[in-house]
Length: 313
Picture (cartoon, rainbow, N blue to C red):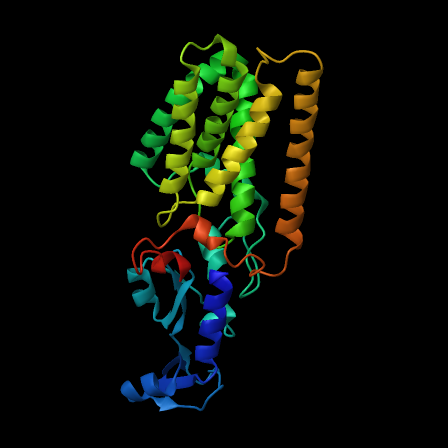
């Protein structure tokens, strides 16, 4: 994963660092940086003790596990988190910047991804700004109005939230370092529900093939759009998948009756349960962050050289 690779890179770079003292102030730097400040380098692997004032501390900033050993004022200028927890916190290898990014009590050890249950549902209700919120509301109204009228508010709520949780379960498993906000997983779930709704009303539709072509094209277009940087396409894909299943369980069956209805209901409900069990088991039990090394390419495709550099790290 990006976080693990970044942590290992940071730790390797700091392996030759040591305490640098200048005018009674100190911090852990490599020898080259220490010499450039005319400081006294105490040797590779050395740590600063109580003989000096520890002013250089790990500073976590940004959203992609970025860390520098710097002063508090410099860290504040970066809008970062200055780690002066105790005297033993002196290098970036001593902290886990993902805890600062994720927040909400995340306390994973350095180099380990936080296992936060809230990341499976909380992003549905968070947005990156007013424009993001308004955009999602408009799409939600256009997609959800007819679905809610056809199913009732409580069925709609289950399909909407269930698809969102399912989508972010995919994202948490396959791209654990990706920062996610927004209701797009639930909105893609509504696309899946709308697709099922169309099939359930198939014989009643006048322009059925036109409607089907439009639904397929819209889903394909949105998923292709999700391969651009910083768009959580795993959440989108997972939301669409669970939307199909939840729609098959909770939407009225206009065309299906008898054994077809019961079979479709049982199959979809069972697949929902099995999918959640598998995803949550892998999310909590998988210890190999590289078990799916190609999964990041679902989230971003390099249509031009360097397009995904900021996301892949």
